[in-house]
Length: 546
Ligand code: F6P
Image (cartoon, rainbow, N blue to C red; front, top):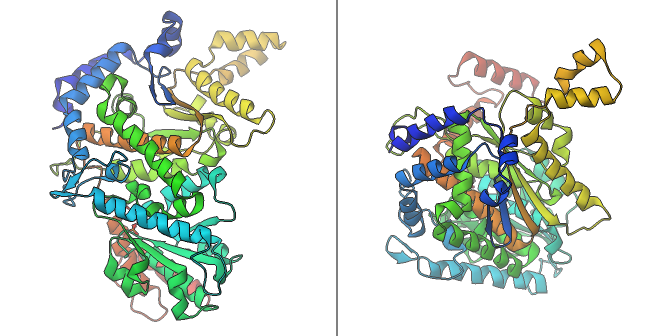
C-alpha cells in the first residue's frame, strides 16, 4: 500500500507543518525528563533518541503509520520464512542463521535449522583444525594468514567484524581481505605472505562474480609459484551456494562451506561467509556474535513499537527523509576499531533501500533510502563536521559510543567520549547570535570587527542525532548493533513499500563491463557505444602500455 494515501501519513504532514520550527533546545528546557521519555534499552545497549525533532505526538503518529502499514505482519512474515523477497522468489532468513534457540524455521516447508547447524559444526571443526595445527599447509607448517577473497556482502561485513574484534583475535592468526579487481589489492596483500602458511577463503554466494573469480585465479597462480596443483586443496576453501562452480574452479567441494539462496549477500556475515571471522577470533567468539544478533532479533520480534529500537530508528529515518527532506544520514562510531562499520552499513542500507519501484512494480512518488556515510570520530570532526553543524543540509547523525576501550591508554577514552557527547550537544543546541555576541565582547571585540565576524560564528543548532551507548564492544554487542541496523533497514522498506532484499540496480553496470572488456583489446572492433564511451575506449587503447 502507498504510505502517502494513508490518513496517518497525512496526519504526519500536518504535524510536520506545526513542528518544523520547534526548537529541541526549548523542548529540553521545558521537559526535564525528555531523556527518559525518548530512550530505549536492549540488554546493555542504550538508544538515546531525545535529541531528535520530535514530541511525544510525533512518536505516536509514526507508530500509527507503522501499524497502518502492517509492520507487525511483515515482521512475522520475515521470521516465519515466507518468501518476502518476491522479485527473486526467496525467503529472507538471515535471522535463522543466528537463531540460537534453535526453534524450527521453515523455508518452502522444510526446517532450515538442521542445515545451519551442520555448517556451523563444519566451521567449528575446520577452525579447530587450523588453530590446533591439525590442518597444515603443504610443507607441514601451520596456517597463520587467512586471505578472504570476496566482494560486497562477501567482504564488507566480515572485514568490519574482524577489525572490530581485533582484541579477540586468536594468537598468531592474521586475516586479510581482498575485494577489488584492481590488481593492487591482491598484490599488496600477498607481498609479505608465504604460500606455505597462507589459506585462501574464496567467498562468493553465486561464485560468478567477476572480481572474486579474477582475484581467486590470480591467488592460485601466486600459490602455484611455490606449491603444486595437488597442494591447492590444503590452501583454498570456498563459501558458496554454487557447488558446481566451486568444483569447476578447482576447489574440492569437501572444502566448501554451504550458504543458501535465502540469505542476501549483505546479510550473510552470520553464515559461513563469516568463516574468516571464526578463523580469526575463534568459533566461540563467532557464536557470541550470533548470540548478540539473536538477542536483537528477540527484541525486534517481541517489543511493542514504543519500546522497539529498530522500529524507532527506522521511523525516525522516515521522519527526516520524507518530511524534513534529508537526503543523507551519517553514522559516526567513536571507536577506531569500527572504522569499517559505516561502509558495511552503507551497503546494507543503500543496496537494500535504494529503490524507485514499489512492491507492485509502480514507480514511487516519494523518497526512499538516504545516502549513508561516515567515518570514526574524532577524525570526522576535523573533516566534514563543519557541514553538519553549519551547512545548508539537515544531516541526522548516529553516534556509536562504547564507554570502555579494549586499549585503555591514559585519558584517551574520556577525551574520545567527551568529544562524541559534545558533538551531539552542539548539534542540538547550536549557538545563538546573542551567545556569540557575548562571547566576542568577552574576547574584547567591538564595533564593525565584532559585527562582521558574528554571523560566521552562529550555529543554527536543532540538528538531530541518535546516540547508541554501551559498556564495551564485545562480540555480543557487535552482533546486537549489526542486527539493529539490519532491522532498521527492514522497517523502512516496509514503510516505503519496497522490496529491501533484491539488488537489480547493480546488474546493468556488470552487463556493460562485460561488453566493454573485449573493446579494450588493441585491434578489436569496438562495439556500439555513445560517443563519450567510444572516445574513452580509444584513448585508453592508445595510452595502454604494452
Ligand atoms: O553486485 C552486488 C552483489 O550481488 C552483492 O549483493 C553481493 O554481496 C556481492 O555482489 C557479491 O556477490 P557474491 O557473493 O555472489 O560474489
